[in-house]
Image (cartoon, rainbow, N blue to C red; front, side, top):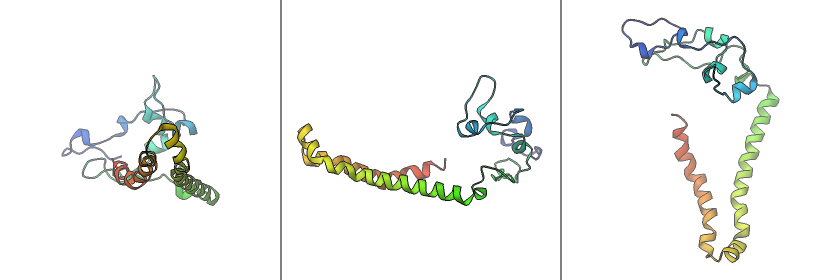
Length: 149
């Protein structure tokens, strides 16, 4: 990490002194579900000594931010996953996506019973299917840009 220069604001630069320190490596569960305890900050469970000591590209300022990159031999780097793990994740995500698409139409099979049970019109009963499909169409348009914040 580079030192702060005289022409940058001190709040724009992150130094090694700003990072919390921890002597033991985090467990896999701590990496997946970070928790704050009374003695440590959430970020301290994710920052290993290797992450702290790595020389990242950039200076940490607004004009020259750090470049986010995986460390060599990083177990979290998806490019280093085995072929079996990559295909397992791909098939699992494809199956879940297919299941959600089937669930959207499963509701329509009970529309007659819904109309009879709740004494409502067929239009109101099919509103659930219509809103589910609209959520498929509009949801990604709304949530995708928010994921970049």
